[in-house]
Length: 173
Image (cartoon, rainbow, N blue to C red; front, top):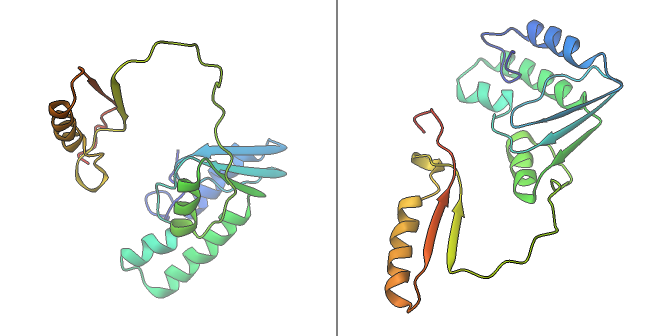
């Protein structure tokens, strides 16, 4: 599967060719993901973004020092790619803000469905923190959370539990 960001290992032609094969057979193609979506050749296209992980190809080209003519060409491709979708949606206000900042793409928010019928359970003294385990700029600061929890436990009379939930990626960050 080619990347749909800046053309590189996969040429722009291959991106369009792959996009055609994947999206053309459908009346409506719905993309749901984290990266720049493929071009949409269906009769209708919806993009539902969980978080815009990739910078748009113009910003990426600029950061890599690509010559201005190529940067302009990437801008034309990026606008065509975005306009191939009839509607863009974000899964949260946070994601919508990043889509506007990173992709210059405004999007209304459509929250993911959640089950709202919860069973009644007795309350516990439990603090849960959910987030991926990473280092660097994207750290969710789990070590600091543990330190704060320890300090908190020294100040309260009842016992408390602290639970960290998340996943570890194979990438160094």
